[in-house]
Amino acid sequence: MLIQCTKKLLDELYEKPDSDVDQASSLFSWHANVITINRRKAVVVVNDNNRYVVVLYGLKAKDFRKLNELIVHAIRQTFREEGIKDDVIEQYLETAGTIIFSKTKNRTTVTRLNKACETVQAFDDLLQHDSFHQIEEGIRVSRLLVTDGGNGYIYPNEEMYKDLEKFVGRTDH
Image (cartoon, rainbow, N blue to C red; front, side, top):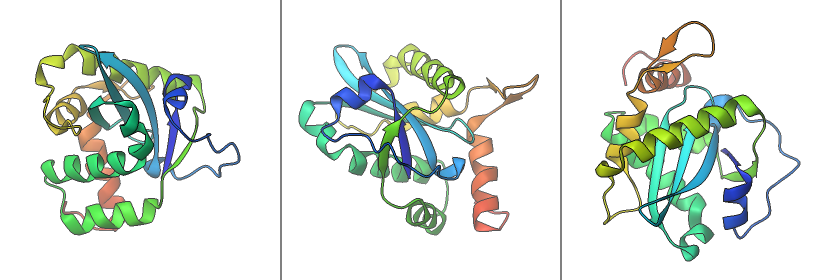
């Protein structure tokens, strides 16, 4: 799984980004940024293919050492709450592989990431202070209408369902 980080997030990480990265399928590729909400650090992760959002909140310096584990767990929990079957989630995570951190790839995806960060900040009242994984926040933001890059609009959660259906080759989720 490729996590393309903003410079701000890369500065928080304790590992150097991998500069020689093969581009993963956009379904397994995400962009991430770190923002501050209510004096706490939050990481917003947005899928490149469908703009689905996963949110981590209340991270401290030591938590960035295990950010890869936290992201995988947050994706698993958020998908579960969305009603996606466990076998589909596990197949997705297994196919995605280990997390590789790299730099962001283009301005369009960074702009989409920044828009998701703004939306997360707008819904700061949904943040749970007792958990890193902000499942409700991710689901809420992923159910908002966004532009598809052309003249249309999409719901990121519905696009994620379609992508996962195509990925596993069946029509139920």
